[in-house]
View 1 (cartoon, helix red, strand yellow):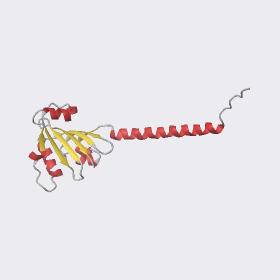
View 2 (cartoon, helix red, strand yellow; view 1 turned 60 degrees about the vertical axis):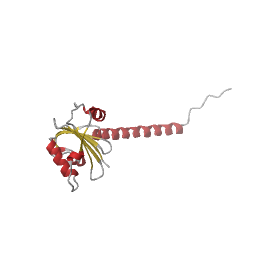
View 3 (cartoon, one colour; view 1 turned 60 degrees about the horizontal axis):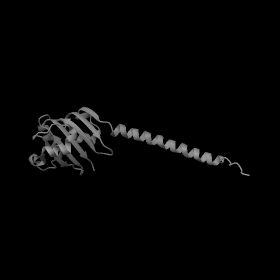
View 4 (cartoon, one colour; view 1 turned 90 degrees about the vertical axis):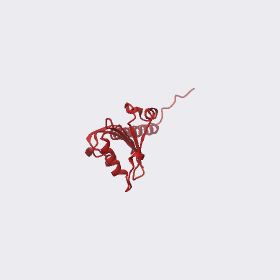
Length: 164
């Protein structure tokens, strides 16, 4: 005669229940942390002028005369920015910010680029390419890498920053 299987003991149910509760609590904590990170890093912030840009690190890399600024922070510390600035103001910012007590030769620092190179690297900007668009690349004092793409015809500027 076969015996009927015995139901699992209470202790097995309570261990499984505790495990599932802990797993659920961990999932809630992860969801809250992910939501907070998304709100901080995943949402573009728009500013009319540089004074309101946060964090300070991002503000320091945008020319003071810039307007219509969109800042997209990347996790953990890089950012992209789009803004409008006149070419003279952009050059003055470069001379102040990147000169390191040496004469900054903007003609050697700026590079034109072919339509193919522009569309390959910066096609996502959806700008219409023309020969006047320039790319500027600098190393920041902290060793980070800064790339600026500027259209002097419209003043639109794209900035990508890699912090170290």
